Length: 137
Length: 232
Image 1 (cartoon, chains in turn blue, red):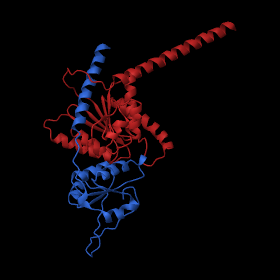
Image 2: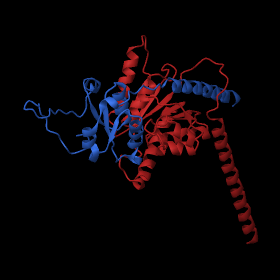
Image 3: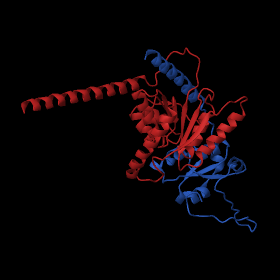
Image 4: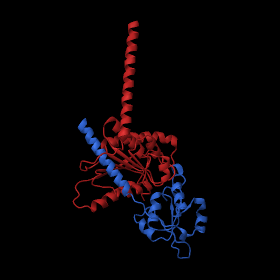
Protein backbone atom coordinates (compact mmCIF):
# COMPACT_ATOMS: atom_id res chain seq x y z
CA UNK A 1 0.00 0.00 0.00
CA UNK A 2 1.19 3.49 -0.65
CA UNK A 3 4.83 3.10 -1.67
CA UNK A 4 5.25 -0.06 0.37
CA UNK A 5 4.84 -3.68 -0.68
CA UNK A 6 2.76 -5.03 2.18
CA UNK A 7 -0.91 -5.69 1.45
CA UNK A 8 -3.24 -6.37 4.39
CA UNK A 9 -5.98 -9.00 4.21
CA UNK A 10 -9.52 -7.73 4.47
CA UNK A 11 -11.58 -9.41 7.13
CA UNK A 12 -15.17 -8.88 8.18
CA UNK A 13 -14.42 -9.95 11.74
CA UNK A 14 -17.55 -12.17 11.86
CA UNK A 15 -15.62 -15.08 13.34
CA UNK A 16 -14.49 -13.01 16.29
CA UNK A 17 -11.20 -11.98 14.72
CA UNK A 18 -10.23 -8.38 14.07
CA UNK A 19 -12.26 -6.72 11.29
CA UNK A 20 -9.84 -5.28 8.73
CA UNK A 21 -10.55 -3.02 5.80
CA UNK A 22 -8.19 -0.85 3.77
CA UNK A 23 -8.07 1.81 1.07
CA UNK A 24 -5.23 3.77 -0.49
CA UNK A 25 -7.16 7.00 -0.64
CA UNK A 26 -10.45 8.20 0.71
CA UNK A 27 -11.98 11.58 0.00
CA UNK A 28 -14.08 11.07 3.10
CA UNK A 29 -11.28 10.33 5.53
CA UNK A 30 -12.82 12.90 7.87
CA UNK A 31 -15.91 10.68 8.22
CA UNK A 32 -13.75 7.69 9.09
CA UNK A 33 -11.93 9.78 11.68
CA UNK A 34 -15.18 10.98 13.21
CA UNK A 35 -16.49 7.47 13.68
CA UNK A 36 -13.25 6.18 15.21
CA UNK A 37 -12.54 5.78 18.92
CA UNK A 38 -8.80 5.48 18.37
CA UNK A 39 -6.59 6.62 15.50
CA UNK A 40 -3.15 5.24 14.77
CA UNK A 41 -1.38 7.34 12.17
CA UNK A 42 1.96 8.28 10.72
CA UNK A 43 3.31 11.46 12.25
CA UNK A 44 2.57 13.85 9.39
CA UNK A 45 1.41 17.27 10.50
CA UNK A 46 -1.73 17.16 8.35
CA UNK A 47 -2.83 13.81 9.77
CA UNK A 48 -1.97 14.79 13.33
CA UNK A 49 -3.87 18.04 13.41
CA UNK A 50 -6.85 16.78 11.46
CA UNK A 51 -7.26 14.07 14.10
CA UNK A 52 -6.56 16.29 17.11
CA UNK A 53 -9.01 18.93 15.91
CA UNK A 54 -11.70 16.23 15.82
CA UNK A 55 -10.82 15.42 19.43
CA UNK A 56 -9.88 11.80 18.74
CA UNK A 57 -7.32 9.82 20.75
CA UNK A 58 -4.24 9.45 18.60
CA UNK A 59 -1.15 7.27 18.48
CA UNK A 60 1.40 8.46 15.93
CA UNK A 61 4.10 6.28 14.46
CA UNK A 62 7.11 8.25 13.25
CA UNK A 63 8.44 7.66 9.71
CA UNK A 64 12.15 7.79 10.34
CA UNK A 65 13.12 7.75 6.65
CA UNK A 66 12.18 11.34 5.97
CA UNK A 67 14.81 14.06 5.61
CA UNK A 68 16.20 15.01 8.99
CA UNK A 69 13.78 12.60 10.64
CA UNK A 70 11.51 15.63 10.81
CA UNK A 71 8.40 13.84 11.90
CA UNK A 72 9.82 13.01 15.30
CA UNK A 73 10.18 16.57 16.64
CA UNK A 74 6.49 17.35 16.32
CA UNK A 75 5.36 13.94 17.54
CA UNK A 76 7.61 14.13 20.62
CA UNK A 77 6.62 17.71 21.43
CA UNK A 78 2.91 16.91 21.26
CA UNK A 79 3.46 13.69 23.22
CA UNK A 80 5.27 15.70 25.91
CA UNK A 81 2.26 18.00 26.08
CA UNK A 82 0.16 14.80 26.32
CA UNK A 83 -1.99 15.49 23.29
CA UNK A 84 -1.14 12.10 21.78
CA UNK A 85 0.99 8.98 22.17
CA UNK A 86 4.16 8.67 20.14
CA UNK A 87 5.60 5.35 19.00
CA UNK A 88 8.02 3.89 16.49
CA UNK A 89 7.30 0.70 14.53
CA UNK A 90 9.15 -1.51 17.04
CA UNK A 91 7.40 0.07 20.06
CA UNK A 92 3.84 0.31 18.74
CA UNK A 93 2.61 -2.86 20.38
CA UNK A 94 3.69 -1.91 23.88
CA UNK A 95 2.34 1.62 23.40
CA UNK A 96 -1.09 0.22 22.60
CA UNK A 97 -0.88 -2.18 25.51
CA UNK A 98 0.08 0.52 27.99
CA UNK A 99 -2.03 3.46 26.78
CA UNK A 100 -4.51 5.36 28.93
CA UNK A 101 -6.63 7.37 26.51
CA UNK A 102 -8.42 9.32 29.23
CA UNK A 103 -5.13 10.86 30.28
CA UNK A 104 -4.71 12.60 26.95
CA UNK A 105 -5.10 16.39 26.99
CA UNK A 106 -7.47 17.90 24.37
CA UNK A 107 -5.78 20.08 21.75
CA UNK A 108 -7.11 23.57 21.05
CA UNK A 109 -6.72 24.65 17.41
CA UNK A 110 -4.33 27.33 16.34
CA UNK A 111 -5.23 30.32 14.22
CA UNK A 112 -3.67 31.34 10.92
CA UNK A 113 -5.47 34.71 10.74
CA UNK A 114 -2.67 36.81 12.33
CA UNK A 115 -0.20 35.50 9.73
CA UNK A 116 -2.65 36.21 6.91
CA UNK A 117 -2.96 39.77 8.22
CA UNK A 118 0.82 40.18 8.39
CA UNK A 119 1.18 38.89 4.82
CA UNK A 120 -1.58 41.25 3.70
CA UNK A 121 -0.03 44.36 5.24
CA UNK A 122 3.50 43.49 4.05
CA UNK A 123 2.25 42.92 0.51
CA UNK A 124 0.49 46.25 0.59
CA UNK A 125 3.72 47.97 1.55
CA UNK A 126 5.57 46.09 -1.17
CA UNK A 127 3.04 47.22 -3.78
CA UNK A 128 3.56 50.83 -2.77
CA UNK A 129 7.32 50.40 -2.99
CA UNK A 130 7.18 48.93 -6.47
CA UNK A 131 4.80 51.67 -7.58
CA UNK A 132 7.18 54.26 -6.17
CA UNK A 133 9.99 52.48 -7.99
CA UNK A 134 8.11 52.83 -11.27
CA UNK A 135 7.37 56.50 -10.53
CA UNK A 136 11.00 57.27 -9.76
CA UNK A 137 12.44 55.18 -12.61
CA UNK B 1 56.94 44.17 -28.95
CA UNK B 2 56.88 46.64 -26.11
CA UNK B 3 53.88 48.47 -27.60
CA UNK B 4 51.93 45.20 -27.87
CA UNK B 5 52.78 44.25 -24.31
CA UNK B 6 51.80 47.61 -22.86
CA UNK B 7 48.55 47.58 -24.91
CA UNK B 8 47.77 44.12 -23.61
CA UNK B 9 48.33 45.17 -20.04
CA UNK B 10 46.23 48.33 -20.38
CA UNK B 11 43.37 46.32 -21.95
CA UNK B 12 43.75 43.71 -19.25
CA UNK B 13 43.65 46.23 -16.42
CA UNK B 14 40.69 47.97 -18.06
CA UNK B 15 38.89 44.61 -18.21
CA UNK B 16 39.67 43.89 -14.57
CA UNK B 17 38.48 47.34 -13.52
CA UNK B 18 35.20 46.87 -15.39
CA UNK B 19 34.71 43.45 -13.83
CA UNK B 20 35.33 44.76 -10.32
CA UNK B 21 32.97 47.68 -10.91
CA UNK B 22 30.30 45.32 -12.22
CA UNK B 23 30.61 42.94 -9.26
CA UNK B 24 30.54 45.87 -6.84
CA UNK B 25 27.34 47.16 -8.45
CA UNK B 26 25.72 43.74 -8.16
CA UNK B 27 26.72 43.43 -4.50
CA UNK B 28 25.43 46.91 -3.73
CA UNK B 29 22.17 46.05 -5.44
CA UNK B 30 21.87 42.79 -3.42
CA UNK B 31 22.52 44.67 -0.19
CA UNK B 32 19.90 47.24 -1.19
CA UNK B 33 17.36 44.52 -1.99
CA UNK B 34 17.94 42.81 1.36
CA UNK B 35 17.68 46.16 3.13
CA UNK B 36 14.48 47.18 1.36
CA UNK B 37 12.83 43.77 1.67
CA UNK B 38 10.22 43.33 4.35
CA UNK B 39 10.09 46.96 5.40
CA UNK B 40 6.58 48.28 6.06
CA UNK B 41 5.54 51.67 4.73
CA UNK B 42 2.63 54.03 5.28
CA UNK B 43 -0.62 52.83 3.78
CA UNK B 44 -2.01 55.28 1.28
CA UNK B 45 -3.29 53.69 -1.92
CA UNK B 46 -6.25 51.33 -2.25
CA UNK B 47 -5.38 47.61 -2.44
CA UNK B 48 -4.68 46.06 -5.80
CA UNK B 49 -4.67 42.51 -7.11
CA UNK B 50 -1.32 40.82 -6.46
CA UNK B 51 -0.08 37.90 -8.55
CA UNK B 52 0.68 35.20 -6.01
CA UNK B 53 2.78 32.07 -6.29
CA UNK B 54 1.88 29.31 -3.83
CA UNK B 55 4.38 26.49 -3.49
CA UNK B 56 2.88 23.18 -2.42
CA UNK B 57 4.85 20.35 -0.89
CA UNK B 58 3.63 16.85 -0.25
CA UNK B 59 1.43 15.84 2.64
CA UNK B 60 1.47 18.06 5.68
CA UNK B 61 2.95 20.99 3.78
CA UNK B 62 -0.14 21.19 1.58
CA UNK B 63 -2.49 20.74 4.53
CA UNK B 64 -0.76 23.62 6.33
CA UNK B 65 -0.79 25.83 3.23
CA UNK B 66 -4.49 25.25 2.65
CA UNK B 67 -5.12 26.07 6.30
CA UNK B 68 -3.41 29.43 5.72
CA UNK B 69 -5.06 30.10 2.36
CA UNK B 70 -8.52 29.70 3.92
CA UNK B 71 -7.99 32.91 5.87
CA UNK B 72 -6.00 34.79 3.22
CA UNK B 73 -7.89 37.53 1.35
CA UNK B 74 -8.50 35.81 -1.95
CA UNK B 75 -9.67 38.80 -3.98
CA UNK B 76 -6.44 40.60 -3.08
CA UNK B 77 -4.04 37.71 -3.76
CA UNK B 78 -5.11 36.92 -7.30
CA UNK B 79 -4.31 35.44 -9.78
CA UNK B 80 -2.99 32.51 -7.76
CA UNK B 81 -0.41 30.18 -9.26
CA UNK B 82 -0.02 26.84 -7.54
CA UNK B 83 3.17 24.89 -8.13
CA UNK B 84 3.66 21.34 -6.88
CA UNK B 85 6.32 18.74 -7.56
CA UNK B 86 5.75 16.53 -10.59
CA UNK B 87 5.68 13.36 -8.51
CA UNK B 88 3.18 14.77 -6.02
CA UNK B 89 -0.23 13.53 -7.08
CA UNK B 90 -2.36 14.90 -4.30
CA UNK B 91 -1.38 18.49 -3.68
CA UNK B 92 -2.68 20.12 -6.87
CA UNK B 93 -5.87 18.12 -6.53
CA UNK B 94 -6.38 19.50 -3.02
CA UNK B 95 -5.65 23.00 -4.26
CA UNK B 96 -8.20 22.62 -7.05
CA UNK B 97 -10.80 21.50 -4.52
CA UNK B 98 -10.03 24.56 -2.42
CA UNK B 99 -10.34 26.91 -5.40
CA UNK B 100 -13.56 25.33 -6.62
CA UNK B 101 -15.19 25.46 -3.20
CA UNK B 102 -14.21 29.11 -2.73
CA UNK B 103 -15.38 30.06 -6.21
CA UNK B 104 -18.75 28.49 -5.51
CA UNK B 105 -19.25 30.57 -2.40
CA UNK B 106 -18.72 33.82 -4.26
CA UNK B 107 -21.37 35.13 -6.68
CA UNK B 108 -20.49 36.72 -10.01
CA UNK B 109 -17.00 35.27 -10.41
CA UNK B 110 -15.46 36.27 -13.73
CA UNK B 111 -12.57 34.48 -15.32
CA UNK B 112 -10.05 32.08 -13.87
CA UNK B 113 -8.14 33.33 -10.86
CA UNK B 114 -6.02 30.21 -10.29
CA UNK B 115 -3.57 28.15 -12.32
CA UNK B 116 -1.97 24.83 -11.44
CA UNK B 117 1.52 23.80 -12.52
CA UNK B 118 4.03 21.06 -11.85
CA UNK B 119 7.75 21.39 -11.41
CA UNK B 120 10.60 18.88 -11.44
CA UNK B 121 11.45 17.90 -7.90
CA UNK B 122 14.66 19.14 -6.27
CA UNK B 123 14.86 16.02 -4.16
CA UNK B 124 12.80 12.85 -3.65
CA UNK B 125 12.13 11.39 -0.21
CA UNK B 126 15.17 9.31 0.72
CA UNK B 127 17.31 10.58 -2.13
CA UNK B 128 20.98 11.00 -1.30
CA UNK B 129 22.37 14.49 -0.75
CA UNK B 130 24.95 13.97 -3.50
CA UNK B 131 22.48 13.24 -6.32
CA UNK B 132 20.20 15.93 -4.88
CA UNK B 133 22.68 18.56 -6.07
CA UNK B 134 22.14 17.58 -9.72
CA UNK B 135 18.37 17.22 -9.47
CA UNK B 136 18.18 20.59 -7.72
CA UNK B 137 20.01 22.17 -10.65
CA UNK B 138 17.55 20.63 -13.13
CA UNK B 139 14.69 21.81 -10.94
CA UNK B 140 16.22 25.29 -10.91
CA UNK B 141 16.24 25.55 -14.71
CA UNK B 142 12.62 24.43 -14.80
CA UNK B 143 11.82 26.87 -12.00
CA UNK B 144 13.38 29.69 -14.01
CA UNK B 145 11.17 28.83 -16.96
CA UNK B 146 8.03 28.88 -14.80
CA UNK B 147 9.01 32.05 -12.95
CA UNK B 148 9.59 33.95 -16.18
CA UNK B 149 6.06 33.01 -17.19
CA UNK B 150 4.45 33.87 -13.86
CA UNK B 151 6.60 36.75 -12.49
CA UNK B 152 4.76 36.73 -9.16
CA UNK B 153 4.60 39.67 -6.78
CA UNK B 154 4.11 37.46 -3.75
CA UNK B 155 5.62 34.04 -3.07
CA UNK B 156 4.11 31.88 -0.31
CA UNK B 157 5.92 28.77 0.83
CA UNK B 158 6.20 26.59 3.89
CA UNK B 159 9.19 24.36 3.64
CA UNK B 160 9.34 21.76 0.86
CA UNK B 161 12.59 21.57 -1.12
CA UNK B 162 10.57 22.62 -4.17
CA UNK B 163 10.40 26.16 -2.85
CA UNK B 164 14.11 26.86 -2.62
CA UNK B 165 14.91 27.28 -6.35
CA UNK B 166 11.72 29.32 -6.80
CA UNK B 167 12.60 31.68 -3.94
CA UNK B 168 16.18 32.11 -5.15
CA UNK B 169 14.91 33.03 -8.60
CA UNK B 170 12.39 35.47 -7.16
CA UNK B 171 15.26 37.07 -5.25
CA UNK B 172 17.40 37.27 -8.41
CA UNK B 173 14.48 38.87 -10.23
CA UNK B 174 14.52 41.56 -7.54
CA UNK B 175 18.25 42.13 -7.87
CA UNK B 176 18.15 42.29 -11.65
CA UNK B 177 14.98 44.39 -11.69
CA UNK B 178 12.67 41.97 -13.54
CA UNK B 179 10.04 41.92 -10.79
CA UNK B 180 9.99 43.12 -7.20
CA UNK B 181 8.28 40.56 -4.97
CA UNK B 182 7.62 39.71 -1.34
CA UNK B 183 8.70 36.24 -0.28
CA UNK B 184 6.84 34.88 2.73
CA UNK B 185 8.17 31.74 4.33
CA UNK B 186 6.17 29.98 7.04
CA UNK B 187 8.28 27.22 8.58
CA UNK B 188 6.24 24.07 8.97
CA UNK B 189 4.54 23.33 12.28
CA UNK B 190 6.54 20.11 12.25
CA UNK B 191 9.71 22.13 12.87
CA UNK B 192 9.85 22.58 16.62
CA UNK B 193 13.52 22.77 17.51
CA UNK B 194 15.38 22.95 14.20
CA UNK B 195 14.69 24.65 10.90
CA UNK B 196 14.25 22.64 7.74
CA UNK B 197 17.03 22.84 5.16
CA UNK B 198 14.94 25.15 2.95
CA UNK B 199 14.17 27.34 5.94
CA UNK B 200 17.76 27.48 7.09
CA UNK B 201 19.02 28.46 3.65
CA UNK B 202 16.36 31.10 3.10
CA UNK B 203 16.95 32.50 6.58
CA UNK B 204 20.74 32.63 6.37
CA UNK B 205 20.80 34.03 2.85
CA UNK B 206 18.16 36.60 3.88
CA UNK B 207 16.10 35.76 0.84
CA UNK B 208 12.71 35.68 2.58
CA UNK B 209 11.12 39.03 3.32
CA UNK B 210 9.19 37.65 6.27
CA UNK B 211 10.17 34.43 7.99
CA UNK B 212 7.53 32.90 10.28
CA UNK B 213 8.09 30.14 12.85
CA UNK B 214 5.43 28.34 14.84
CA UNK B 215 7.37 27.29 17.94
CA UNK B 216 9.13 29.61 20.40
CA UNK B 217 12.45 27.76 20.51
CA UNK B 218 13.01 28.59 16.85
CA UNK B 219 12.46 32.27 17.47
CA UNK B 220 15.09 32.15 20.20
CA UNK B 221 17.58 30.48 17.88
CA UNK B 222 16.74 32.61 14.84
CA UNK B 223 15.94 36.11 16.09
CA UNK B 224 15.02 37.57 12.70
CA UNK B 225 12.10 35.12 12.53
CA UNK B 226 8.56 36.10 13.59
CA UNK B 227 7.04 33.74 16.14
CA UNK B 228 3.34 33.36 15.28
CA UNK B 229 2.37 30.28 17.31
CA UNK B 230 0.81 27.14 15.91
CA UNK B 231 -1.30 27.82 12.85
CA UNK B 232 -3.21 24.54 13.00
